[in-house]
Image (tube, rainbow, N blue to C red; front, side, top):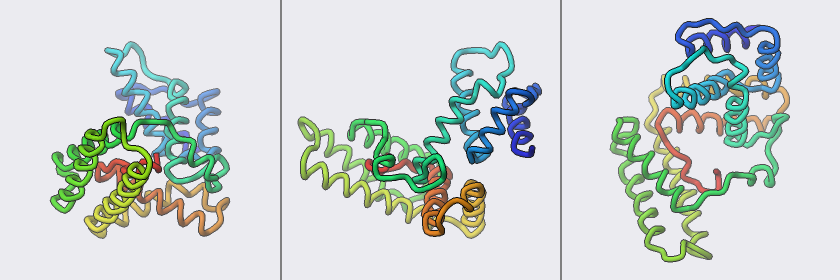
Length: 232
């Protein structure tokens, strides 16, 4: 099974060339990922997440088996489906499912947004065309910090709408900055991620999911955070 071979090869690289075979129960586990429609890139991200946590514990004592990565792969898959508005069977998420998101404070969200945008600009992922948008995000953070007792009521709703508009503008600016090659590359990746879902989704739902997949890949490429607080 090609999917399992790709996972085995990736796991070998992460284990510094030490081969851990994906056979027996491990093969069944990975085959289950494929059956659930977990894209390879999503599975790789889950494996990366496990290894990052493993390295933080200190020097490694033995190679990592794929079974250890299962929980992280499933967590990343859940994040991916939420970002694309999908549920387990590949159908669009209901408003209730889409709203089931981890709670976090608005100021802490804005703090992370400004930090990630500033970092992306400093490392060259974003050019000068984003400077005004970064300044707007920083201004919203400053205003939220100055508000005693937090931003509430109509003021909070107005802030959420501004953040939604800022998120849309960030993506629009990022798309405009892409050259033709990069745009085609991201489009192919978005199609590849959704290959196993195409046959089980209505055409309009698939188009929406593909657009969301492209935007997610674009955020990764440019280092863009999700600014829209309601989309987390």
